[in-house]
Image (cartoon, rainbow, N blue to C red; front, side, top):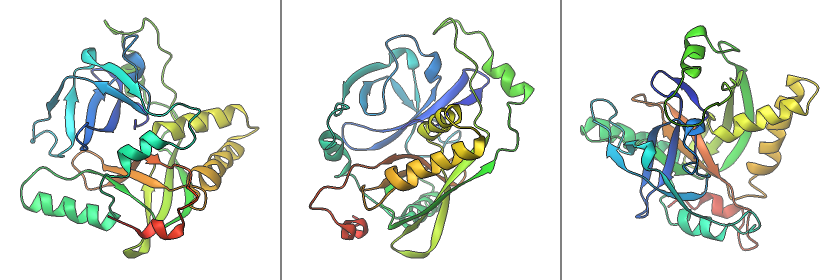
Length: 268
């Protein structure tokens, strides 16, 4: 899962990638200047990679899953499920056996880790009991500031000769949902790269931004986050050292014939 790129002093722009190790642990890899990677080092959402990593120093980033990555060692490997496999069999096999939590459980784990002075839990997967809405608000600035634009426009020694300047998404998107162990709903910012790309595509095919925003909302609420059609899991993570949880990705396989709404409450 990749977040939408952000300006970076050292790397022009970076994304944070959340993934799973071969032994079933969550991992966060950064900084990755994804669009500026050399040919042959780009990877897709459902693709294994081999890469040299190092644990981030706890004083810089106390989150348990955070690792720095040497982007020059990235070797893309096998992809899970082809675009023609609508069952998501391989992806299910990988994720179905991972722990599923509620937001309260993750928040309590973060608090307990911090109190015990140990690396903090900062990534988890939840099964919402209800998807309530998707909303958006204006960004503080619709365009990059001069300082951000300078970072994005820096020349690089390695990578492609030319990459177009990153487009800023002028809205922040939020998903409203419920978990089975708390009556009050949650509202989390959605930072997945894919929602930014969807918005850009919808703008190109719409007469107005308002129409594009409605298309984004419909795409998620009527399809990708539709609990009747899909077994929705949300991948959530914290931002830096703050206990602010964000949605950084989602896993939404089509429901199988033997699945019903009751499975939404089967938190393990």
